[in-house]
Length: 165
Image (cartoon, rainbow, N blue to C red; front, side, top):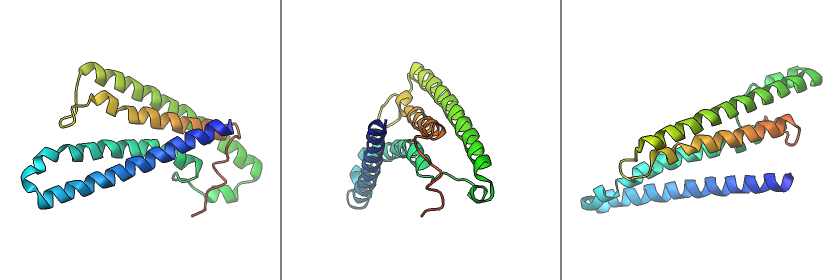
């Protein structure tokens, strides 16, 4: 299991870094074109749309890693106040609820992808089917549900990283 999880972590990390660096490069190119070659700037209008789409993927692909590293918003004082057994039980409830809610969001997101693909709608400048753009929440919430499930079954300890900078 740890090999598969390590593989998933690496895919997530490399994807996030790749998307972020691509966004930076595209924005830099867009600035240069607008500053020095304004007459052809309209030919590169697709860059803003591409970066917006990549930003969505960046946010959703980072959900699972952020949860695993204890970087989601939480109330850390409860961790230190509650007795160990009560805290453990509370964390299991949080993990189960988070997993079920994430799976619900996967299902809702998938339904949205199917609906938008059936409409035939495309993005304005890239001419991409809009349904494929909406796959970001499906992937992101799937990774989030996986992390909640792994935490619930004790495979990862997402609470051990809380409070670290």
